[in-house]
Amino acid sequence: MSGMDVASATVTLRVNRFAPRPERERAARSGSPFGRKSSPFGSSSASARRRPRGKQWTQDYVLHVRPETTVLECLLTVKRTMDPTLAFRYSCGHGMCGSDAVSINGTPTLLCTATVGEWAKHAPAAASIDDEGFRHTGSPETIDSSSSDSNIANAHGDNAADLGVIELAPLPGFPVQRDLIADIDPMLNQITKLAPYLKADGVLATTDEGKINVFEYLQRPEQLAKYEMLSNCIACGVCEGSCPVFAGGDAFIGPAALIAVSRFVNDSRDTATAERLDMIDTADGVAACQSVRACSRHCPRGIDVGEEMWQIVARVRER
Ligand code: SF4
Ligand code: FES
Image (cartoon, rainbow, N blue to C red; front, side, top):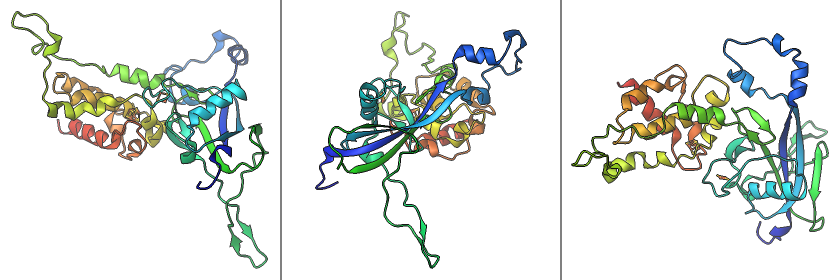
């Protein structure tokens, strides 16, 4: 990038778009509501939840950026100046809330912390065969986006450097609601079922007079250190979208849910360890983890998710 007018660089956002089929159209296609087939597993089976029903297409947006511009800032520019129909979710804008996890170039990560300079890429050069039968790969070529809808915000002239393409899709492993918005309720419901709150027996919380004193849950620094990092989880779902077992559709409660359990199992104040380990000692609990450790790669809070999985699996097996 040195020596280049970085303000005049362009990037192409290639967005996987999805518009769900309207409710009344779905009802009409399925005929009488009294004639619907019912499944003994209900409509929340993994395959039914993950199968999108509606219109899918790819759309390109070309805009002027600096390498340090975040992908979230790019999408906000698109939404405000080019296409108000584009749907995505965010809240804090600073890597704290976990609401904007998507797939960028096939990798689950947060929109607000991903920069254009980090993620824009050029397509691999097309191979050509010469007269003597040798393959030549040549230098990277500018992406031709003419095959899909394209919107161009070119307020700076035409000689901008092309930073390349960023491909955006919803977080893998979750049902798509619209465009880049995935329905993460299955993950949040799973975490809720596993009681993500302190269960103490109240002994330490009792004053000399027998009254409850919530400030009496004492801990040493080394006890705090055992779960402090785990308590930083923001339930973004990046680890779940990275996990080939979870995102692949197998029955697995997922790494985020196991991190929530691990956080309390490692808390010296919690008295429900046996109960918590029982809850995850199931076929779709720790038994489903295949130790691929892909969950560790992109956790925005720096949690070594794979290592924590390994530790909690060992705790369950050693009982
Ligand atoms: S462990 Fe990391 S990647 Fe997984 S949900 Fe929590 S913050 Fe996100
Ligand atoms: S918007 Fe809150 S983490 Fe990205």
